Length: 111
Image: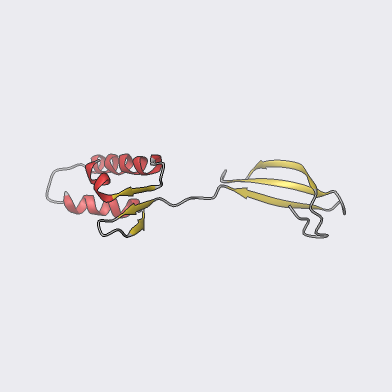
């Protein structure tokens, strides 16, 4: 990490803690050259999940789109909302557990 003040590449971490939301780590650093302190944040990079359509297109997985499709398919049937939520949870978990981060729509349909 380069010092924002002098550009030196070496520093030491003085303090480290989670940010308020818990989605990042805040680190206070001290430059070993000029001695000034600065803050850095580390965040996990989110890798998007993709769905492969019949025609070969790749589209980002959208939980809301899946729920809307299920609601449309079941609108004249006595299917409780919690059952649809359970299906969406199962499919989302399957997509997240996929090692390739890509799942074909026909595989989702089988779930």
